[in-house]
Amino acid sequence: MSDKQHKYVIEHMEPEFSNWVKLEYLQIQRDVGKTNFYISSVPADVNESDLPKEFIDSGLQWTHTEITKFASVDPTFPSDSSRICLLDPAATVELTPEDGDKFDFFLFGGILGDHPPRDRTGELRKYGYTSRNLGKKQMTTDTAVRVTKIICTENSEFTDP
Image 1 (cartoon, rainbow, N blue to C red):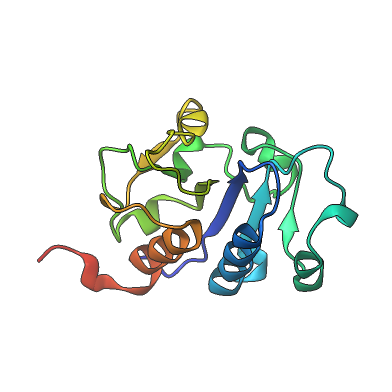
Image 2 (cartoon, rainbow, N blue to C red):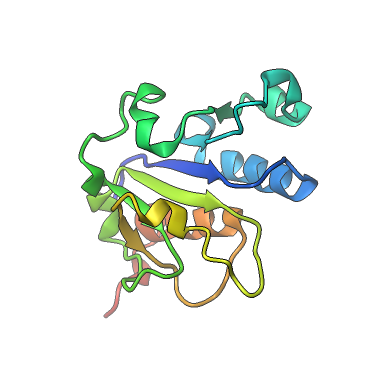
């Protein structure tokens, strides 16, 4: 379990900001803190005036920049990709409290759940980030971020005896 502050990046993979997405992103910001949360890959044709008013009012951090160029947005983004964890339902290794010390950034695909899943996280998998899963249950994006934070920074009871 780690005491450090992690950063959480949602690679926005939806064509718009539906009411559901707005609620999820604002909840993530409340859960992890304004300075620890970014939305990346916002479509290039979206301007600040196109963003939901709630995003502007809350100071939500967003960028058109995709994750592979994210160091230009946040200078603390590690050049060593092994310090970045992709939360991926297809990963073969489950996230553990020890991962809180291994990773600085946690990357999520901002994907509304499809059933059956279309594996859009595969678009991020190709960059070679270390990946972890959160078990077999499908989760909303804000729940996945919350669970990641709990496992890595808040609760040592997740470790096996």
